[in-house]
Image (cartoon, rainbow, N blue to C red; front, side, top):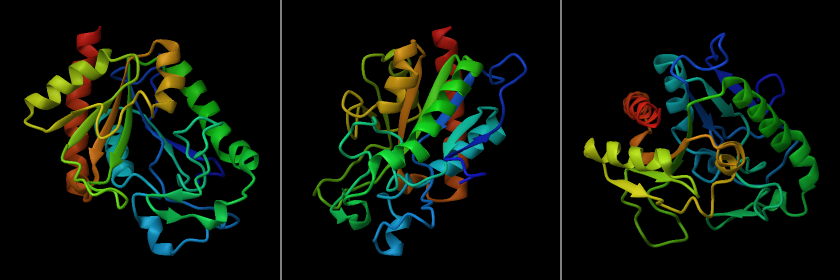
Length: 245
C-alpha cells in the first residue's frame, strides 16, 4: 500500500476540480499486495494469477493517467484480502475460495476488521475524489482470464462492457470498440446487473455516466500491450464523453 492507504492516485484533477478531459479512471483490482500481518495460507505463486489481481490493469490505468491525462484511483491491496468491488455485505467480500482455490487464511477471518482497514477507507476516499472531480465520464478498468479453471469454456471476447441500469456510455463504447475491429462483449464475460458494485455505488447512484471495461488478460500482459490498450481506451472514452455532452 502507499503510505498505509489501500489506494493510490495517479495524475491529478485540474484546479477546476476535474481532469483535463473530464474523464477519470478507477481500478479496484490493480494490486496483488498482501500486508505482512494478513496470512492467506496459499501458495505464493497464486498471488501472480487472476485470483489475486486483474492482470495488466495497473499498467493500463497508469498509462491512462500519465500519457492520456485521465487521472486514476488505483487499489493497492489484493482482492484476496478484501474485494473492493463487492458490497460490504456480499458473502465473498473476504473470499474463502476463488476459482477452485481454497483461501484457508480467510476462513473465520474478522470481516469487520478487513472492511474497516481497507474497504471503507478506499470507498470513502473514492467518493470524495469523485465529488471533487465531478467527471463527465468514469472508466472502471478490470481484466478477465481467458478461461476459468472451474469452467470448461473459453472466453473469446477481447473486451467487454458491463453495466447495470445505466447503459448510456456503454452503448456508445460497444459500438466504437466494435468499429476498431475488436470482439466486444455486451455485458460479457459476466453481467453488470449482478456484479457492478463500485459503479452502482459511485456512478449509477449519482447519475454519473460510466464505462465498466473488462480486457482479456492475455492481451495486456506486456508493457507494449498495456500502452496500446490505454491509447485505444483513451480514444474511445473521449468520443463517448463527446457523444454524451
